[in-house]
Length: 366
Image 1 (cartoon, helix red, strand yellow):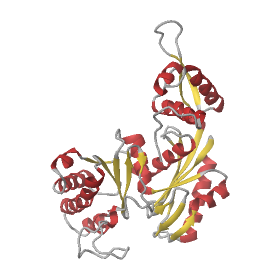
Image 2: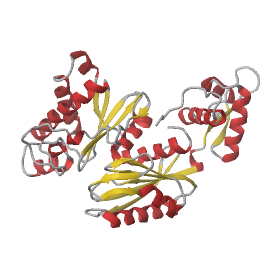
Image 3: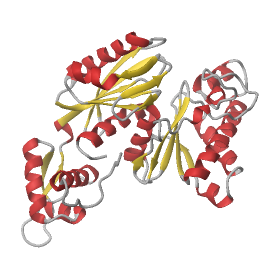
Image 4: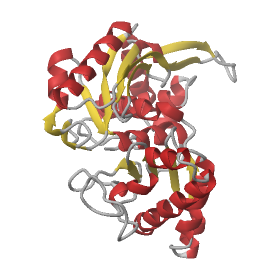
């Protein structure tokens, strides 16, 4: 999926692509004149004026007043009307709490919905998801652009959950069911992929990044050259099941020594609660995380790695230990180029990520 439109369109579907160019410019840089938009997009001024007129009619753009005069009459400044549409966003990645939110086009959370979610599986988990969506829709003050959902597991681009073992979902076409029920486009993403979308749009300046999401398990989302990378079977980024110890603990997947048996948030917090030294626990987890990431960095040449997990203790220490471990296992020049840091987006990372997914799919911006 291309996240940012950055070149003028060819003949095919020109108007649609040019519209996305103008929307992207407004999304990224508020308070621009029509002449500014023409320069930013490379489009003819007449084309920009026609597209802006359409966006104003639809309520997606708004006039912000006139800018300072340089020569002649001051230009009318334009911006994205973030309040014109709402996105319903759902985060299924927390094993104990089901989170939903109403989010506007600028990524501002307008309303939150939270329900206890521990141990719910199968049809009951899907029914609870429907309940929080309905509750969020009832609180939305503006027209809906779409619904976005982030869930653990393997998810296809059409919204089928190939496998989500924590919910016991297998080959479940969640998007079609929810679309039929609510009458809005439903976009579904793996939760770590959603986290990567959020970082790409709101936290990183890089076109190549990897986001490691640590919760009840460990996964990662990958963006390469401005495109999200899913892999042949839509399972790219499943670093939680890289074996980092041959004789390690048995993982629920059936193998031994998987990364998530050492680095998951419940594992770290349980060890600390049992009296182990927090700094030693985190340092050991960081060493193993760096071991798993070293291979990914060597293959992908990604320099920007973000670790997300609001339940993870001592996140700065974890990242420092992981970076040292990674650098000890990669080419010196490659390892030195890596920036590995905790996310600044907090517990809302998945919610923001699926809002970006809906924005990208429905408006072509992110």
